[in-house]
Image (cartoon, rainbow, N blue to C red; front, side, top):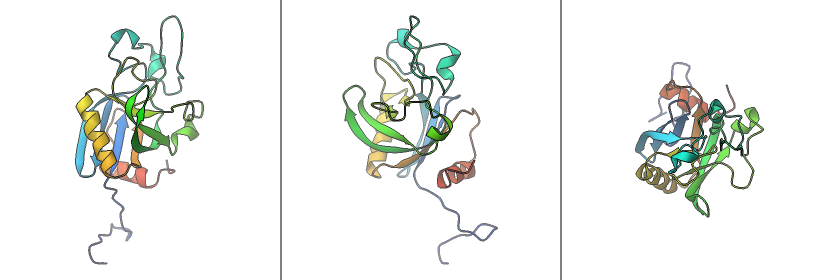
Length: 185
């Protein structure tokens, strides 16, 4: 078994080179894609990420992943991206969002079936704009988004993403385990 290390149980640990984690409570996105390390602020839900501060929702509902987009007199918005595992697809040019990477649910739709995984558009990683986020991930700085999207393009997409409500960073072992075996809790 030259070049392969075993853990104490005698199994070969898997170590994906590419992964991204998003912590909803901290509004933090981090990970490694194609050898590039990322760690930056990103928004999800409530219109956060809008360049127009008047469009940002402030109610507790906009922080609840079960909240769908709401159109009312107060202009409240949808909640954050539902927790779970996703795959970040290759970028595409979107008429409304600009350059955007679709986020395809692997497990989130099982726990939060009422959210719009298949509505026209779905959830994306995209840049800031007039409306902000109703569940998409929107990096605070355009340059961070561009660097991450470039790294995702360089590996051909399908980069694992783990979205958590928790404000506590999971260990590297927890992240890799969750991404390697996404259906285990």
